[in-house]
Image (cartoon, rainbow, N blue to C red; front, side):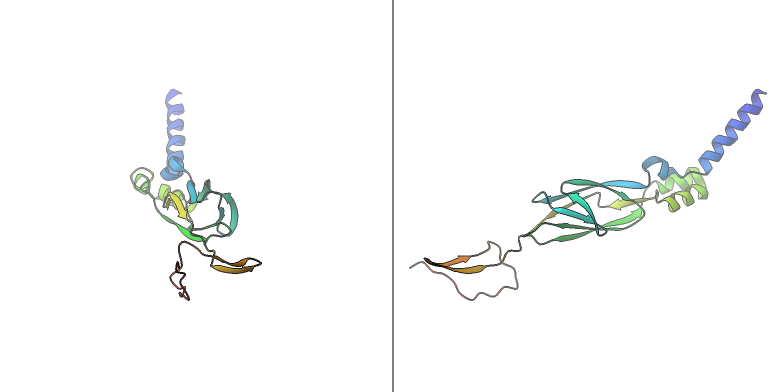
Length: 159
């Protein structure tokens, strides 16, 4: 009787091992990715879906590439890509789980990892130079960092 129970338990355990993927068990099918910006408080859109403001942790599917847009009014938006690649845990599947474990991880996405693990964007200002005529004179507003395609039309000199 005891050997029959032990054999049944062992068969169930072996069946469970053979029908699960190592990477799916170890780190799951989703990955937390930290997203930050300078300045903070920028809007984060992932795959065209609003996800919050920086700093933020996003839980994303490992199996897919993701496009992240970080934007803030008055600043140039940044588009960044998270790329899905094969995780090192795939070797554990080959050694322990065989082809069945490998297939499970491939289907669920557990055999992948997203890279880079953290995203950070330094947003640059997009404001342009403006000239306003007031009652007591002309006001010129300029930016500290001009864009490369701007053309110099004049230069102020101290008299």
